[in-house]
Image (cartoon, rainbow, N blue to C red; front, side):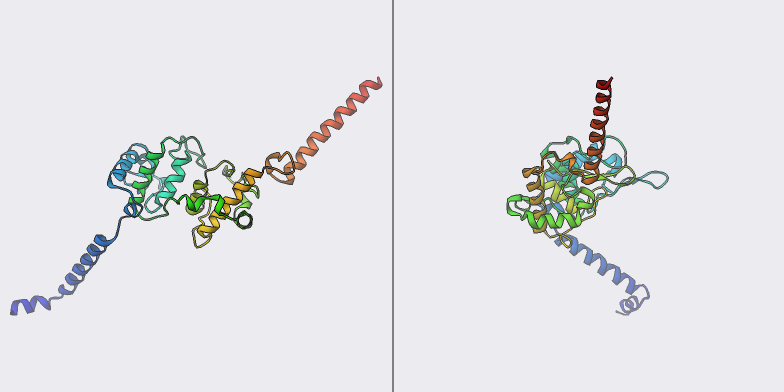
Length: 266
């Protein structure tokens, strides 16, 4: 008892007790905390298959554990994917932006390299690395349940400065651009708002609620279905483009008429 009492009052005893308490707390938290992928209903088989696809196709840039990679100068080769969630993977891989064919200021959309099942497996694996935005449900992206009027107002306030009020896209700086939003899967539009790919800011539920995101999808769907009520849209790029068309075509016609009249006079 005397020896035990001496150890109890040893200066290192409090540190040992603190370390044991931290280890116990961490162990209990890990035991009762559900994994991100399990919360989304992904099985261990899907996660394992996704890991194999990841190592074979993505690890060159993003690292074998999705932790990201940098070159010798400290420049980022591929960012960390821990915590980006399944939605980011579904958007980037589903639109063909990832894997990139070549380096550049911005990843371009192209036919997807993976089928739907493989995309789900990749998303399950990345989701297992850390919690993040999940893939939206069919109801969340159903344009028929949204309000295009409200969506149009939200879009003009938050999105039109880059994507144009008609969703036709536009140029940004340093070779980057905001892509057109016509013909885009509604799920990918929702995921882009939720994850903020490329130069796009993140519009999570604290900025734009899930219902408002669906309203934006309804607005873009209405634009695509209604077309251009005024006739030829000229790319829907606004009065500058329309003015260029008018001056170019108008002046060409005037010069052509002047040349023709001059030839007839001779």
